[in-house]
Amino acid sequence: MVHLIEFVSRCEHDTLRFGCQLAGHLSSGDIVALKGVLGSGKSVLARGIMRGLGVSGAIPSPSFIMVANYKGRLPINHIDLYRMEAPEDIETIGLEDAIFSEAISIIEWADKIEYLLPARTIRVSISPCKDIDMRLITIESLDANVKSRLTSLAIDILREKVDANSRC
Ligand SMILES: Nc1ncnc2c1ncn2[C@@H]1O[C@H](COP(=O)(O)OP(=O)(O)OP(=O)(O)O)[C@@H](O)[C@H]1O
Ligand SMILES: [Mg+2]
Image (cartoon, rainbow, N blue to C red; front, side, top):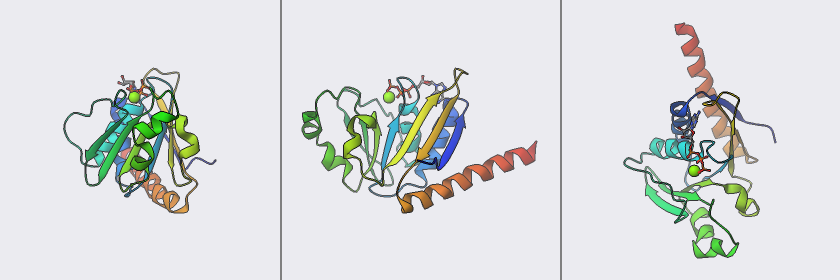
């Protein structure tokens, strides 16, 4: 799959900010599937997206309860499947009802439910780099509507880079 966006984050703040920018292009019912090794920054990015959607206050990790609900400009499900052990957990926590709803679902360890994810899923991968604080964040989706929304995100990011360079 061709990456719609490739973003190099140099620190936690960059990732938070990128999440905030991504949030501006999300719509009701979107599914954001986050993939990346332990400590790569999935929760940081999820927090950035939720801040961008207007969630204030603490955003604790939902790794024990697996699904936490928030209300920003839209309802949000923050899902963390790290501790999901058996497929039956999907029913216990009401995962399908959560992700096929009006809410925006942000899913950490989404690779565990790959088979449930529809084509319109926004797939975000975070890869640590040699530099300890650097991450490569890539985004892809198969859906034409999502692609067009993410193209405008890519343009926003590019515009910011051009503005920053022109100030140098
Ligand atoms: N560029 C960066 N982007 C995001 N986090 C970064 C970056 N540089 C350093 N960090 C640090 O990496 C850690 C990322 O932690 P985080 O909990 O978000 O990872 P995670 O992928 O959710 O891990 P887990 O799989 O355990 O849930 C934080 O301590 C954060 O400060
Ligand atoms: Mg996490």
